[in-house]
Picture 1 (cartoon, rainbow, N blue to C red):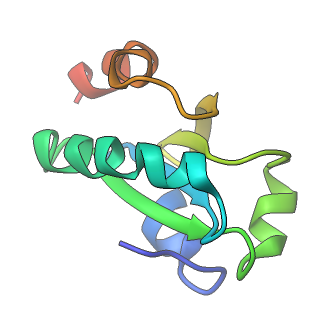
Picture 2 (picture 1 turned 120 degrees about the vertical axis):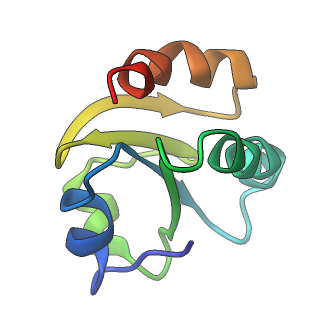
Length: 106
């Protein structure tokens, strides 16, 4: 699901389940490398984790607000609060090691 500045609060901050936000851009090769991993996580944890994407070129205010300096950046929000940040194209196990504790709590 693509999120933008108009629906970020509703889809991410007000979500009843944890939200993994993928900050990306069309020109970013590492972003394309982790995209299948992020999509896979969304399917595997459906109902426990919402996965959304934000194009930083189209939504610069959100990227600035959360200090996104390089992409891909994955931010995990739980109950509207930023809990984890993962920068770069990392393996699935690295992402899981950061977010699993928040998925089992639900």
